[in-house]
Amino acid sequence: MEYKRILLKLSGEALMGNQQYGIDASRLEQYSLEIKKVKDLGIEIAIVIGGGNIYRGVQAESSGIDRVQGDYMGMLATMINAMALQSALENHGLYTRLMSGIKMEQISEPFIRRRAMRHLEKGRIVIFGAGIGNPYFTTDSTASLRAIEIEADVVLKGTRVDGVYSADPEKDPNATRFSKISFQEAYQKGLNIMDMTAFTLCQENNLPIRVFDMNKPGNLAKLVQGEEVGTLISS
Image (cartoon, rainbow, N blue to C red):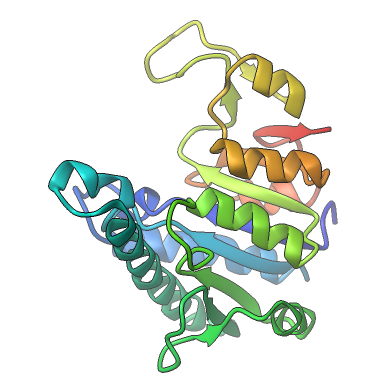
């Protein structure tokens, strides 16, 4: 296997499928099956999922809600998605643990690094919800930080496009895809891969990022087996 322990970052918007908001049951089922394929290969899996399909903290200011309050609302949205994904994974016989950056004893464990690593060693899928528990940090930052803390081999950012392009491929037909690119090159070209905090965390800790199309069946399994899928960003 190319990797032993991965941190999979999923966007909340991806769970909408073709809906305007909320969770598409068929997309949730698809993702859980893709994750199961990888788990069956013996890979240790941690997951961070966004909440943009329900609420985004950055929406707060335009709607008159205090930004800090809005960010906490966004963290609660990630917990709803995390619980839905946890349920879908357990329906396929997988063992999971949900860990939260905010104390919610009835539905999750608090994030404790050593406990998270122990769960992974025992073969459980660990889902990190509620961000890092502080406002002004995105779920991209959460993914980078948690990946470093649990000593993951890579951050796998599952999106709806098949990698990193020189421009938005949905708007520019001449956009070219990179198979590999360095952190420095990505920064110089102004490529919007992750927010700067998340990107810098990965760069300073030599943690590679791979951006790939999560919606294409089999991509995740191919990737962990060493096939060239998506774009690799590394030192």
